[in-house]
Length: 376
Image (tube, rainbow, N blue to C red):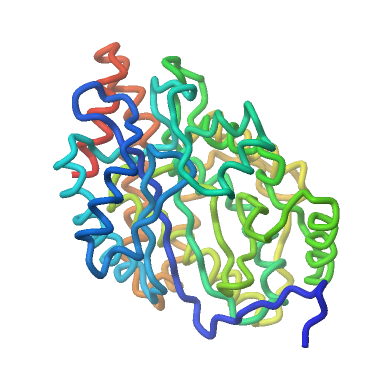
């Protein structure tokens, strides 16, 4: 029997995949956020059928989260999400709201947002106060299965090298409370203000992670492991590494691309570790700088690549990375989806598209229109 200080890890025999996609609810007329989740979930409970368990509430009543089951391919995950999206889309139409996929809303005010019922949410706001109330943010979480707990932390630490790539591609939160922020991802900067959020610590062993979790519980910082809200974290009960780097995503095509890249990166690192390679890591201060650069400049970020502090434009590094990952993608059945990453760079990321709409119209409601339209 495991001791109270041990954290059991439920092994995933295959590199399975799970996706959580947060979407905001916006009023069809005003384009402001809508606290309509209670009404939406009355309809979901009554009519969602088999999809009901994959449609979740979140912290605020302006949000719905679509969650896959345990999948083996990106295509399967997208089909799973598509089924839930079809149900929710239809129900939203009935109550006068649209679904909005981005990291933040351009002009909504935090003070008018309502908290979902539940002790866990109320306790979070009681503790975090002003910063907790500010969390008008939406993201995408990707779980990838790992077959042994001793692989988790080396893979997690090495994956931090690719943090700016994932954030720059998904960045979709350039505006906040009616103002342009100058950031591609204002969400990334906001979320790290919560006491257990932000970049993960880089532990050498599972026992170190267990010691950290013990200290967190002993001092009352957390009651449960899932209250560690790192941008990349172990999910021991699921047997996964959970990547929470990305801003909200506006459409399934780009979501599939980002999920494919995440899946390939983790599986590649897993295979290299299994083959006996010591995975490269970057110093925490370099990882932190890369996060800021990607949040600030998005696809124009010049990122630090290694301990020697060599630098390169993130899109140039992405181009080579996609080629290197092609054999991994072929083995995982996601070559087409991985190739679509290049389309995001060519078309412009969501933050760039939003900025373009605002420059052309001067109207943040038109920005909301454009994001809603991308979901289809």
